[in-house]
Length: 184
Image 1 (cartoon, rainbow, N blue to C red):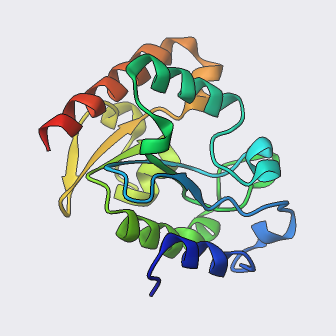
Image 2 (spheres, rainbow, N blue to C red):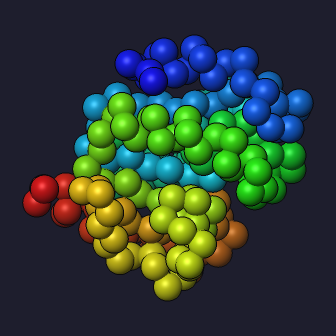
C-alpha cells in the first residue's frame, strides 16, 4: 500500500509488468492536484506524453485545455491519469493484459486522490473502470454513481479531433461536471 502519489510514482518508474515497457521513453503516471475533487481518466499516453512524461499534453490535451479554459476549469485543480502508464505502439488502444497490469496503479491513484467525480474519457476508460457492458455512445453524458463516486463518461478528446460533431457533446458533458461539483 502506498501512502502518497509520490511514493506510487517512484515505485512505478521501473515497472515491467507488461510489454509496453519495451518501447517507452517515460512512464506517464498522472498530473494535477493531488486532492482533486475531479479526476479525468484517459486510455494511455500518446507520443507527446511519452516524450514529456505528462498526460494530455499533445493535440488532444490542447483541445481539452481549451475546453477547460472556456468552462473556467483550472487544470491545476483537477487530477489527470490514464488506464495504462506507458504508450501503446502507434497509439493503439491498450490490450486487455496491458490494462490489467496497470489497473492496480490506477486504483491506488483513485484511493489517494479521493475524487468526488471521475470523468471517463472514451470507451477504453469506461469499459476498464465500469465494465465491458458499457458503451461510450449510449453512456456519455449520463451520471453513474458507484461506491460514492460520480462517473461521467464522455468522448476522448482525440475522438473530437477526428469528428468535430462530438465537440458539443464533450463541452456539454464537462458543463454537467462543473455543475455537479457544486452540488456535492
